[in-house]
Length: 179
Image: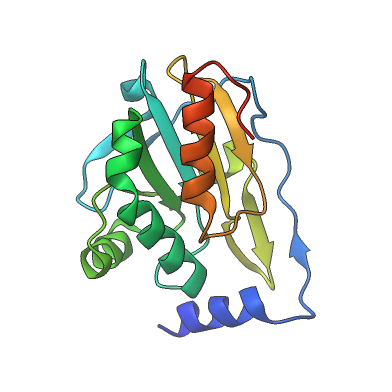
């Protein structure tokens, strides 16, 4: 609990430098492959999503204010996202047990993937640190049915991210450019 409070304080406290993540796939590039466990211990691989849209969103820490807002917004929009033929996967560095508690408390109907070894956050260029603590920066990747990044959302607003993704999915599925 102390680590959660410390991370929350650091995320919102001024005066601390954040080491910026770099790299990761950009729009039009292949999404890096991975295999991670969700809150129920089930394994998920990006290759399993072949032929389907995937919303892969990274977030810093279970139970923090922005992360709770974001997970609940995706939860509330899950029917619309599934109607758009997209599945949602949340990813953080938290362990499976933390994800299980977070998912249960907020009735999360989609996988929360544990990237405890930081390999996926590193591959996607979202691994960052603040005051010596490492976490995934809040970014979202919309991955098309061919496994390419259709959109990369940086500096994500947790309240608006799901709406952005839904709007872009509608435009992309119609052959447009999205926003």
